[in-house]
Image: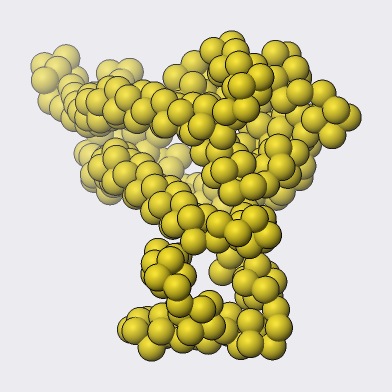
Length: 334
């Protein structure tokens, strides 16, 4: 997008610009895409139409923006905005993955360690303590019972876990359950506000980009809803789009929405009156993303020590339960 915008801004025709990009790039998929776009344009298609024919490479948001920009005569500016927006979204996703990588590895390591102790370490003590089973302390007996249960029913538990995973994926494909689950997640005490800020940032940023590119409010709202990942929020946006289609202002149905806060709603009320909706939505997107980053950093700063403490507690309790009979040897012998 950036290269195409620069070439068009320099006065290069679209076909020539696409040929230059195809020759310059070292990535074969990108070169093939540039050649396909150029072939459609040479045959009389518009840039938006050529993008639409490529299928999976371009989203409907990008195609709608390019179509509106071509009609309005500001294609170069729109392509630059699309490139900036895509880079910002990619950086945000990379940051999220980087922040979640360490807690995820820590949680998986903790789970594997606990399973290893229960299925390999503890059974080594079972034969030693078998004769004195009735005299063993309650924590030791409970630990041995859990270990024996895992050892005897490991296959059944693995099959049940796989079936539960498949059932969960099937339920998430069901629209009503997906909407209900999205509503439940947004109501969670800690995770809900974080996800709410993330979804609002994506929605406001996409709508701002579309409005600045000449797309109507109704079309921007519907396309912005496709970017949102939470099914409950998507249903809420569909309700707002239906109200806007009936002629109501965007801020009207927002007042009764749980997703949009009072501050955001008031900002949109003022922006609709002044004709600055695109810039205000961009400001909302930036602020919500900052809130999302701050809440995510705070959550992860508490999550990492919590996982470490939980792992230490589980391992410590396991070791204590195994060594407790040795410490109480005099009682066992008596």
